Length: 312
Length: 312
Image (cartoon, rainbow over all chains, first blue to last red; front, side, top):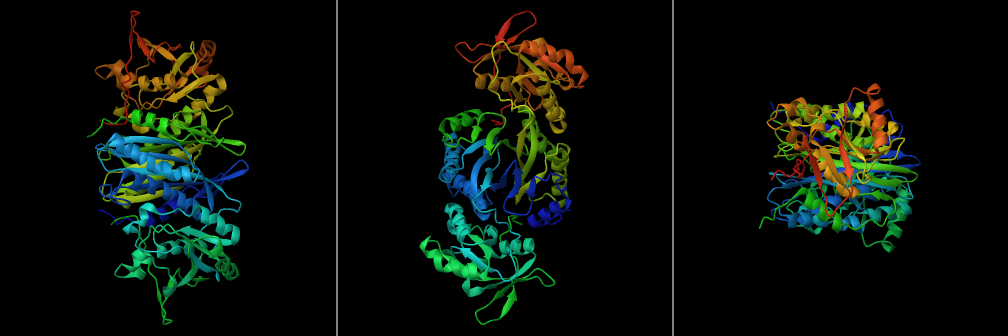
């Protein structure tokens, strides 16, 4: 009997069945972009991500350097989502047996480049070979920036919802060469009081749902306010691409309307990266729901069709 | 051209080509059981290990609970090797598509049991499904105990070499149900000043070689002093099994002859676990070498045939 398996369902089960840590030094555990723990007087953030050939990349179509880059940049994007500063990383790889030593070195080069750029040295790892496809796991530690970490759980009814950049069609190239928004997250938290933030990995509709569930709120987003990437515009349904494709690795965040207005006015002088106001956080009624408002004023519930990492 | 690939060779290449961290807060990086970093006034240790179906376990022959247990216990054993106290863990899994939800929960239960026992809560993770075999990655953070972390690099000529427990034949069962020597490492460091320590994962001859290379020393071990497990005694060549099988997850450590004598005299009152004195650290001559002394007094160089995780 192969019971239908879902990543989110399993994570929910784990959250319900985990032993709540009896240590007061675990501040945030399962359910955000990074866990937060207390070490002495300091807070430390932790994220782990496993990238798999055939799921997150196709090794037959990309270079080992690109795979390494993506693996490290995904973890850096998690740091951005918490407005945290990358600190150190460890990397574990399962290398296919037919991968050459030169390809393994290229993979490491790809991991190293963004690690160096964002001052996050690789301090350890594990290397194993098997007669199966490539798997790359990056675990990253980060420290809070000048402002405390931004969680998924702080969105409030009335908040404005914003995103960086343009969304959709990432699979056509961006997912291998995106810029993790580490620096932009620092600028944003210096310019405004962000209530909640996440990076768009599963897809806008899915990741906004994570914020709504963690914050116990609902949301409404405006179809014509969603910034479409050029790749999305080339899709048969650009809006659906922007809502559900995932792996945009842009920031999705919530803040007060006043802060949002200030930010939209002053932001262009700080960055070439586009900011868009795409909707509002609303009060939770009887169920968690995200509404999509069409240009004609009609609304419809948005189903969470974001890219779940189970490929079933 | 498929250049011959070796785990140790690749790690050597990475060590030579890594950018030395310019951060003074990286104390020990690649080349020990755990990296050591400085966070504020505290030291933090980090290890990551990926366990693969067909390499570290055979999912067709063991339960998901056993796989989870082994994955967590391997990281706990790394903590033991540094005499560190487990703090928190994160887990990333690549689940085969035909794995049921119930099996996934069993895997998590197996991870959870030793984590709870050693007070090391799982604070985060990543779950992905693919149509390939199971891969489980555990990254563990630890804190120093009352004594500083014991590195691989502190062995001195004249030191006595000791091991806990009995060695060899782990594949016949122990590799799935070993006790990580976390508590024993604490007792040992309280009773004696250990100069260097490692856990036996690759195999005694291979892991002693790691200590010798990191400490820039040589070693001689006595064939008839090596404690043979019952499983090793059932092998066609028990001594070779004990020297090279690996995955014993016992502690191999070096200390002064006086401390070793004190320890052997007082230890039995503290633990049921056997301690054995198996050899001596010697000065480095022209090359790194471990000699094996036979009962008749003859010696021969010991080749590093430890279980390298490349299965080539």
